[in-house]
Amino acid sequence: MIVKRSLSIRGHRTSISLEDAFWEELRRMAEVRGLSLAQLVAQIDATRGMDDNLSSSLRVAVLKDALARASSDTSAPPQA
Image 1 (cartoon, rainbow, N blue to C red):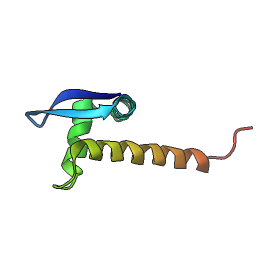
Image 2 (cartoon, rainbow, N blue to C red):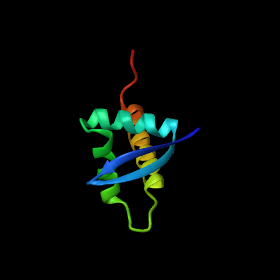
Image 3 (cartoon, rainbow, N blue to C red):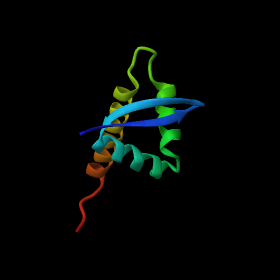
């Protein structure tokens, strides 16, 4: 299910529509980094291209984070 949330990013209100799974992962990413959700979204917003949609950029950031975690998990030696 897609959920629409409103956030303040660098002083302006914006609404973002994402699936629940992406909101959950964004919250987890923010917590791991010691940021608020709005701060994390602002960081991602600041790095996206002018023609890139914010919701899409957030999905890509979640995907990149998940791939990085999966890659680091598979490179670790097997547990005995």
